[in-house]
Length: 253
Ligand code: PGA
Image (cartoon, rainbow, N blue to C red):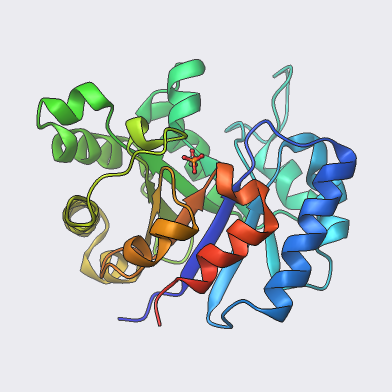
């Protein structure tokens, strides 16, 4: 089963106009020059930079995504952005359910499923994030937690074409720590089984499952070559053109 590798950059709340444009242009240029032809690139800048980033990557192979959305199409939701607005702007993807949103904004699986469903309805592809905390890992609850999160936050209209799962152990995000390769493969394989139960085997075989959490050039080769790892959701290392592109060069041969 061929699943196209997706190298996705989650810029989080970083970059201002000038460095954001420089970063987006740099990724677009280097992706054209050096990166493997058979992998997809996505950058997810903060809302404020989406329009500028869109211009900076115009005509390149790099796609544009946002980091969150509301579930409603429009209305009285101060500070929120709808999936339709993102689509209108030229986004192809939106991340939902990142652990920083689950923690800082108390987002539940139910809310994340509503956001994902609405984004799919609006014609966007979604990256739904899941992952256990350090305490849950220590209590051997990793698979249980991921199963609950998938069952609760992947909506009924999800398919392999419109949905990507990102497995991001919370304790590995921005810490420099990563699980062992065996642990990553075991969790990804278990996630695929749960997706099969929820959405059928055909979707499970084709759906991409990204690993996220302290991915960098030095560990990318090992992680990205695991059988059930179909790309990366990259935070810190996506803010440096060289590191982001080097990660893609380490992807499956
Ligand atoms: P990190 O973040 O690569 O900085 O660990 C990944 C993420 O949170 O998506």
